[in-house]
Length: 219
Image (tube, rainbow, N blue to C red; front, side, top):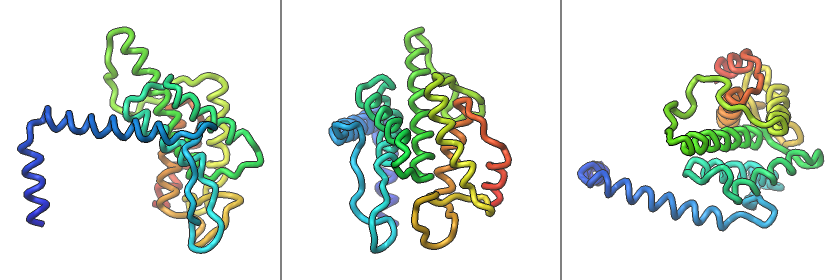
């Protein structure tokens, strides 16, 4: 506890501008490292170990890719950066292939990444006009962004199974085609799905309000 207090005091006493500079440098290094991890196909790799104990690992390439894109976009990598474009193209192709297994985790994070993509585009449009974003991220304005018709269709294709796979208790788990260990739903998956669905509503997607109500009752 003493060391933690001393560390907190040292950070608080550091020059704010110098601290901000160090933070920016750390973010820049992280962005550089992450960009180098993108594969030729546009994805960012896949984990090796099984999700639950012994057994085959669940395919999580789309989820990892979406998380990476989300991190990059939130680190001010522009929406039209080649890495972002290539990553989103991979996600659309992967999800569009009916033979691929997609988890509810994947769907939720992809929706979050898509919102960050449109957030970046809106910020860039304002920048060209000499303006800055005045609204806070994740505010209650809905719809907030207007995706292109193909992207709206892509979003709808992610939202539909999420709504369909909500359990009677109101939560979510990995989804169809995935082995189940434990309860039919958990808080971890449920929170990711809720964040994804909220992103979807800010991009003109229709989500029945009762889905949110049932989820909150579950939580």
